[in-house]
Length: 500
Image (cartoon, rainbow, N blue to C red; front, side, top):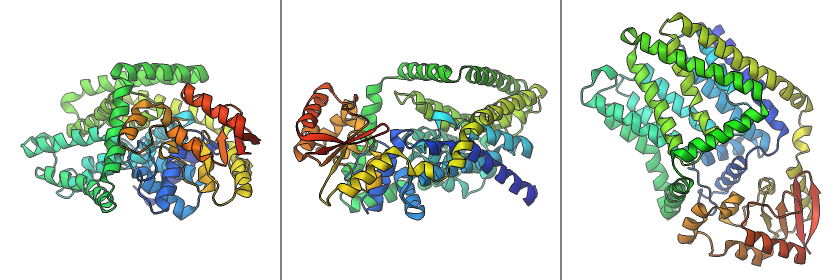
């Protein structure tokens, strides 16, 4: 493959990512998780490890990487969105590099484009942990398929999957699945074509990032905080959400919501996807005895199946969870296309055409006005303008309590007033709040403790107290606002109360 063609494909995918995702700049807040990641990253920039003073029930990988990105390119929402775009592009290039083992460069590039198409809309426009974790996940897949028999590869595969898991905890399922394959190779299963003595290297490579992380927290005397935030609270939250039935119910409800917003396109896409899946399975069954590199199919399926299993076992479902599956699905389609069965070629072509066509029909009208709007869009973000008003008014000792729109704290470079209010709604989730309370991380009456501080500013989405709070907390905060605060600033979906 010539350098010119590589350059054309890279530029083409980069342009596709731009068209697909640049419209996100019109939204200051897409998902509260993104805002929480930004606050946690700022805490790292202050020289404090995650979870020591602020809490989120995500592993720390995103916080460390995002802290570096913000330090290098500046403190803004647009930097965070560009970082998410870069993650999508990196995964697209990895999908292309993996897919071209089985299909032409053109079709490999199209399947990478299909991956990009899955990140549009509310599913993936914000910078999520899934987008970052996909990079080491797909890189590990490519390395196993391309260099699985080399003695050095298991170390790097273990390292990559460990980094993915330190960004998305559920990917530990993938670590176990691939570990089993290395174990089977160690016991002499030659068909896997993996380095026979690779299990030890895989384990050592995987434990290296974990060991560095544990050592860093041990040096700070904060191992208990790390264990609480990455093991105890996530386990409590997952257990409280329910089992596989709960995940399926939430998936169905989410799908119904997508149908309501984009009925025709969604129905068409899902029908074609179902047909394509049926053709893939039939192609694999029809050609099983002559499949090239059947080891590859085993590895791809193990990765995809363990991702699905991890989602089913999470107890809850959000549509962006699927972003961990889509790149693997694109590679599986490429493998099935490589069987040479003619109907598979047509199914892949139709799926690619519909996916990319739908992307362009949706994204171009959304992206064009945002691109023409330039920097004025970000300058007019409502929460940013509220933060500017607070910054111009406050004294150095004044504190801000963000009951909602906690992105305001990022603009102010101010730590949340309570560890649990790094993600405000966590205070109303017993499966999160109770373990924190039991560990002494928050006070028995954390809301009452904050109220006693009488913070100078209280930020909400409007004149009313947010509905996520428990009824008793809503009542007493409302009473405090009526007695001691005035509505001082009102913007679009943001309100600031100032102490009288």
